[in-house]
Image (cartoon, rainbow over all chains, first blue to last red; front, side, top):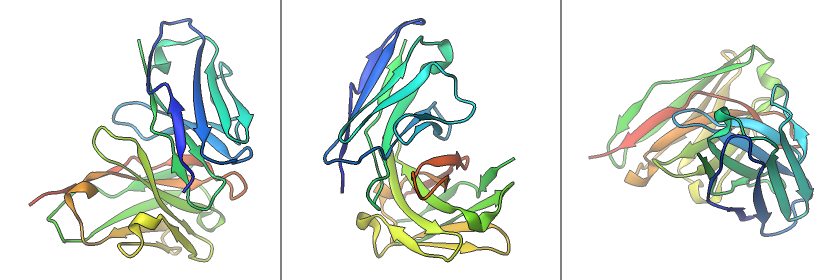
Length: 106
Length: 120
């Protein structure tokens, strides 16, 4: 299976900060990388698909970039609603895998 | 609007089986696949497998091969996930999620989750 490694595992930030989360794949996955946000007790929510495409209804302060093995999720100006856990997911191989998550805290 | 509504919480004993349902509405069921993802308490997301609602083809995570079966009932637009020989480490919230596109493999709609507790 393709291993997905996120960094950092946790991150403290303030409202208005610019935040970047990194996801690295154990082998090239082209652009087959998706990002999700999860809040406690809730199902994950799709933010970014195909590395850089913004899912409908997601605020434009979220952006994704990268290809091959290295990817980033950037939140340009943190809002109070953005404090959550973020996961990357590869869909290059037929056996999908998630990163371990990055918890974004105030 | 697209909705995936899952069955309710389950409590099972070790060695038993559990079957979770996921009823879809608001879209053409057979045009999309359904994935199952689970999350153990305090842990991350684990992909369990995928089923095509069009033809029933499946693809299971290797670690669950032989214990998991995913099926669909197109007459009721419902997907099912059965997990057998339950162990305590199968305790988790189980989610179904629609596969938005075979081309990108992302999950655009999710069910609300079904807690499954395995305990003697």
